[in-house]
Length: 449
Image (cartoon, rainbow, N blue to C red):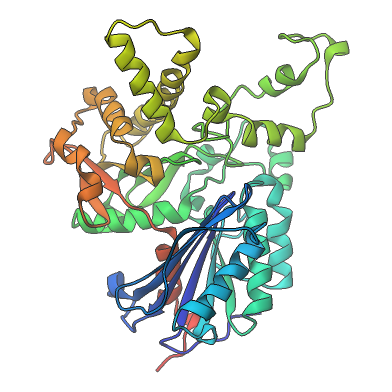
């Protein structure tokens, strides 16, 4: 099945299902050419639904400057129980409160975390839907939510093409020896056991935005990018292509996150679950650990939530600074209160470790370090700590610029001190915009003149 070409000025809905959130953006294709893609879509509105797995969900709806209708800001919605009902609420709100006819939506772009062997956008058919469904175990926090929204889209917007865009696609350029694991390759190939990498839509957007900011062609741009959020990863981009990335077969590997462990010794899970209460190879103490149980522990019961009790990195930084201020004032600080700084330092250590490795892999030819994602864009303290840790590589931070990121406009903000030598940038990544642009530039989806 192929997409039905749509009217040249139809609307594009971009949907991004997170583990407990749903981000939605609506764009209008403005007729610009693929050769001049920067203004090829116009944003009409955005909507964000959070706390889906911890009701009541919070609903926000914001119109672009030329839109008409009622906006919403973090309104609690008891009726939202899952991603499908969240999307249904958005559609109802769109019909009731905004002057937009849903029948004008011709393409719906879905961010899908794991694409397996799909490396290009795929129209959602029975075949592609079930293929993505079979990959859900490899991305348990995301693929399921994306699939439920696809179902809702097909039911509610039957005349629009649902198109899957995969986070794994960007990393298809990784060399074989980097993507493979040192295991039997007949088994690995049969079961698809290799490094796929994730956050690819974000990295594609960042590459496009940063290369434009640096006035370079993407194919001539080499970056070390840090996508730091509740899910965190890093990527070494060499001449516009993914060379290496921290996540692997699944998103659980690499950097720790809000509830993910990050890279661990593979044997840890068996010692973690045994009945001995300590490291033991005693067979009688062994527990039959299933993949689903291991995924549950490493994906949902680890990370800085396990270390501190919160998934909010901003809270970790705030509490760490408060404890350190008390310590500096001579107050006694108990051991339990040290957990905030330990969580911060652990995250910092893992970031710096990968950063140094990627710097070497790129042979020192790095146009910029780029911070992105919710934490990368918001945490003044983490950016400062990371750049200070790699000062030996020639990077330095402009403290004033670093403090003022939130008040600066534009997709890319320069926070580096040595601009001629080593750039340090913050990029406000936008996965929905990246999908919409890719969709708008794909001629097979649109009626030709």
